[in-house]
Structures are given as C-alpha cells and as structure tokens.
Length: 200
Image 1 (tube, one colour):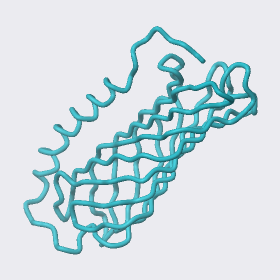
Image 2 (cartoon, rainbow, N blue to C red):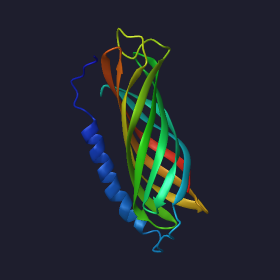
Image 3 (cartoon, rainbow, N blue to C red):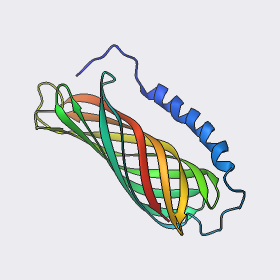
Image 4 (spheres, rainbow, N blue to C red):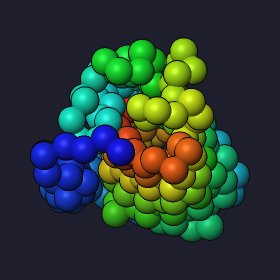
C-alpha cells in the first residue's frame, strides 16, 4: 500500500465545503424575493457538466485534471431532488500516466435557497468507484488490475435560470474513492469546479 506522512485531506475539504455553503446562501437569497412555484425544480431531472480541478492520489501526488458528470433523477419538491450521477475524473500522475476515476453514485440534493431565478444547493452521495490507470500497468505497485471500491462525493453550488426549466449551475465538488486492486488499497481524491446545464 502506498503510504504518506501527510494528514488526510478529507476533513479539510469537508470544512471548506461547509464554509462555502455559508457564503453562497446569503448571496443567492438576495437575487429574487419571489417564492418558487410548486412545479419549479420538480419532475424529471437531467443534467450534464464539465470542469477541472486537482486529483490527489494518497494525499500526496496532486495533479491538475479535468472532470465530467451526467445526472438523471427526479425532483420531489422544489427543495429536494434524488438523482443518479455518473462522474469521471482524469489526471496524469507521476507513477501511473493517466489515472481515470469513474464514479456511479446516488445523490440527494437539498436547496438552501430555492427562488425561481436562482438557488443555492448542497448534495451528497455514495456508490461505486472504478480507478483505471492508462496504460494498464496496475493501480498500485506490484498489481496489474483496475481498482474497485467505495465512492463518496458532495458539492455546493448555485443555479441560475436561463430558460423555462433550464438552469446553469456552477459548483464546487469533492469526490473520494477508496479502491482496492489485488488486495492493496488506495485513496483517490478530486476537488474542483464544474459548470453544468440542468433541466427540471
């Protein structure tokens, strides 16, 4: 297993997400005082987005990378949605070349502010992670297999209505994958910014 003397990044990143949530909420609440209609952000949810950030292997090997995500789910109320997320992160690491991290998670999303024109939201989820080095040389030293394991992720952001039922949503995301390859484990973290188009 790869070892590192550095402290885990997860507590620091979780604190950063909480601080950004506290900042985004009052900003979004000033855009519009009109209350949402019952059908706003309800029904079918579909979205696609892309962005970039930092991919971190074992809290030590941090490299710039890019990210993408597709969403499909359902909005039960203007303040709460449930969706399936298929996410992808990729970066070039020193020991592996290109390391791709795929995540399929179930996400719960809650709106802290849900005006018609603008909203502020947080989301979190859990699911399956797949870590795939390219070229295929093994996720960890002495292994030759793709890694599988637990995926956890979350984010905080805003959405801005640009058309009926269509929103532009910038957000800060954090994803973590605890994967195993032939008995050896590794932790992969990704934090970055993403811009998405979301239809409700």
